[in-house]
View (cartoon, helix red, strand yellow):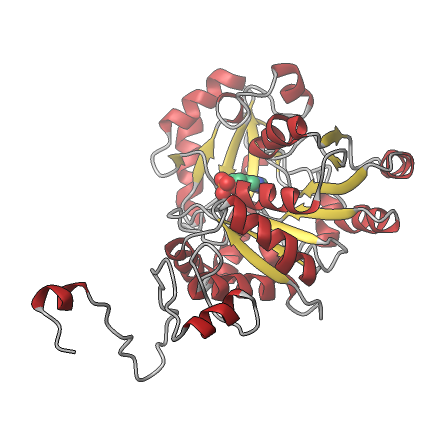
Length: 396
Ligand SMILES: *Cc1c(COP(=O)(O)O)cnc(C)c1O
């Protein structure tokens, strides 16, 4: 066939590669072409492997998901599968819709990421999924509830938690849950698999907002579900992802992959800088207290030491001057940026009381240690001397 000029313009080209690309290619295609009707049917029915339509799967996305599954299970001998989602929130909603049904209960903590609490109470609860929040540090209480309330199907934990860095003993909760046939899900966003591997500690599923440390460069929103139950991951959870349309996009997956290459380097620097900043802050006269799990004074120091390789890049602190001094300090920094995210390479400040925890009633927020003057720092990988100098000039 000798196509016309117009047809030539419209026509797709064949992938001209002769040698394998060194870097993961970005497959920006919404569908995949079949060689024959028969091949299309075989792929659709799962008789042969292959791709069909971008919402069902894409080579770039699957390569990155597999890499995250390998990181979450590295050195453990555990086999896990992963699915990338459009955000951290959709990782949680897709997992919940995949494994829970009307009448089931989620047992969880009060100090979750704000969006997670809202998802549970404003979206899942109206669908008939019950939410029970308790102090997960009280293992006797947890065991009593698990024993008496047979509707509890999922224990959902987040550790370290935002913004006080309180930690949950992952193994203690997961082993208890397992003995009652309850699945445990851990939000591992703050720690990353470099610092903490919840699947090895007994959890069934891990979720991440890859938006934060895994991507690390603040240029994409995405999430991931990593699970040990391969049949459920490839069955029901993939089905929900595909039908609720919570799939990630290839470009975000590609950016995450770029970020993952330096995850250990970044995490080592984040941890080292955060510890140095926490120690410096705790000796400053104007600072009333510092929350960092790496400080021996932090209530979760022992738990963190038990289950984390180092203590992460997040901390929070309060000035003796309270709210007014805190706001003055945040408005006076030059290097640090005021931005409502975390885990980027640069240092970010956030004021929980007027930003991330604005929708939480004041008495609940304060009872959880999130006082009016608390300042959250996502400590970056800049030279620590510059970060300290900036915060010092802003405080003084
Ligand atoms: C940001 C965040 C989420 C939500 O992730 P998105 O990518 O913003 O949807 C969930 N959990 C934690 C701990 C987070 O920090």
